[in-house]
Length: 242
Image (cartoon, rainbow, N blue to C red; front, side, top):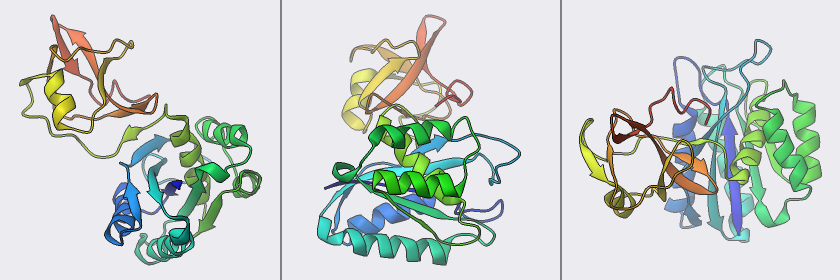
């Protein structure tokens, strides 16, 4: 059974990190041998004065394969974890979806895209989750994190939104590495230019200070740009739309 798990608003300016909390939930599944998980993606939502957020208003989501018999226990454990570990003053929300049981997929995807452009409400989140057959729950504060959590799942399922959480280690900044070596030694599926050109294994890239990957066409992609006759890994500014 393929499931998606998303959380939002578990941190404060002083304490916690939602990406770290998402990875703790991944470890919960793995350590208990309930299933296998994939890397966490960060999904940027609307920045607006009417939306209370800690720093960047982004939700975290990951995919897992696990037995249906463990789903209810996982949801209960995840809720307890968020209740006990989220930062004081945060408004944590949890969303869990079983892919094969999702109804009204277009409504779910639409909610995700709307959260990048519109101010949404908890009432809209509960209505969408009910229509689509997803679990959402509040675990502290105002519970507004359910909005981002639901949106995070909708965006992750598109396969074309979000950066993978954390940095990749390929070598020292300024060093050159072959695309084939990147593919063979990491979880990266392709190295691709920002205009869509897929690099061949024999081509090389200059390593930047921070290596971040994005989700495109359901793949983990390392984006590069051309400068001075060489390919370079994209920086945070170039990745701001992902």
